Image 1 (spheres, rainbow, N blue to C red):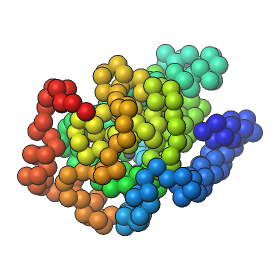
Image 2: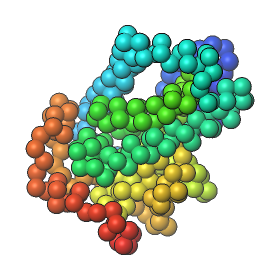
Image 3: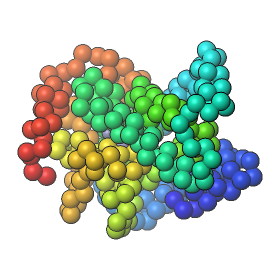
Image 4: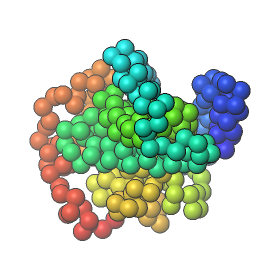
Length: 291
Ligand SMILES: [Zn+2]
Ligand SMILES: [Zn+2]
């Protein structure tokens, strides 16, 4: 993480932030590829689950749709509406503060939107149908980091990024946040055996995210933070039990194996299994259950 952030910092300084990000992201992916083979957390997760193509296809579609939305925003004039507001200084964002403070503030602000986008995706049945594509994997490894139905990705971008835009955060802060989110996202899904000490109290870590991928609602409907865990602490959804999470992760519903069928799946009529097993349980009831 320190290496990736340093590369991003150098890239920003020399005027090539995107190139630097791509280089750091590739280095991180390569490191995790080897570490997952040398020191895996779950040996069982090294087996092929037949989802590599679908994982990559979802990653590319989500990224494509989000980038398309930004371009479309430019075409219909949303971007030109935001820019003058920035220039005149109507935004409440303290643009003259040191960049590191602005990025930290941005992390906390965006995280509020990301937290609720994620939590609502678990607690509202209709949204869960889209988010279930991400949770349907039976193993965690760095390749399923970007496996999101594109509608699921749009919701996070609109809620997380929207708050930053409304507050008037500059583009540099948005770029830093995108980079940090991408690095942390890949780390949280990796199958590498690591020790985290105090980090899970503040940041999202693989240890916390493994609980989030649990089949049991009482464990899975927890740890919604994307980068920081602040909102999980505030809203009481942070867990980090002092034991090993089950390696048997995934969803109880049936997800098709093919990418195109997975894209269509949320629009189909849910099975009875979906209603009885996942979403008719009230969160109040969850609180009473023991982990
Ligand atoms: Zn989730
Ligand atoms: Zn995940």
